[in-house]
Length: 141
Length: 272
Image (tube, rainbow over all chains, first blue to last red; front, side, top):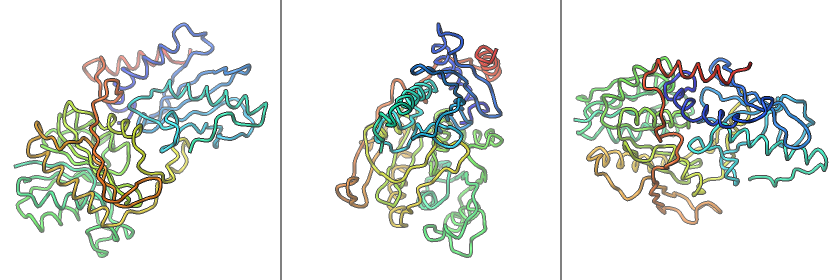
């Protein structure tokens, strides 16, 4: 299924992803709403999160093979080098076979908003790590 | 007089195809397979070393016709997910009686599932676990659980393998594949189950009931994974009421209306 090129992909967007994004945006401060744009065959979600006292700009990409392949989220705001951070400030959120259910991407149950919530959780961990030097969530295996 | 359509004629798909094409009820085969036969395929494949460099689809056709000269074989030497080939693939699926998925990657399995559901066709899937420690066979019918329902259910409830996993969170980077190869014997065992399941389903898709949706057969005893070898696990997977893959949700009916609605939605949510 190709997200922006196939009928199935477009139906997934219109019936699942876009409604949950609109529900997420509904009543939210415009500065924290999700904005979407196309980038070739990829759909890019841009938004801000404030897990504690700091505001972070993020970008979540729904690549053409989404939702089979999980969304890719990176933080645009400069971060200190920390655990669970990949090249290009991409967040390490998903791992096939992980012992933690919420770390195993499931296209039949998760939407892009789950990825936004996962990014919020990651940033909350980052804020604690920044102050204490310890990542508060135990390693998933 | 059945028309079989199969995606994949790799080391797992070819033995399934070999067993199925010998059944006289199957009179027509459509094979979707874009790859070329490579040296590293030889150890686990039916074709000889001398065939390296040739199209797997052509080799498969020759193999089948050498055993069944009456068989009608159509080759679609393309990537299943190639947008440019979807019209031809849809046409082939629409005319088939049963489908077999022997693809080795998740996007292809989900794409196949969508094709089969769109055209209301029954289909089967075989999966050999890395290292050949066991394997799954699954069957699907219109109105039943989709591949998303099954994969989601099995992810939640079953621990089947703990190999190093592909890291999908690294955009643009190499996606690591699990590289512990399965033995030819393991592949052949799961392929035989896959072929039996397919023939049973082909017989009577409306009433087929082997007592499971998915079956896992362990082939080896592996510490902390499988307690014993040669043990079957049967899973009856229901269709998930909240499945985001197969549960119908209201969307415009025509493709043109769909494009307009999507453009409007993206404009609404676009950068101001």
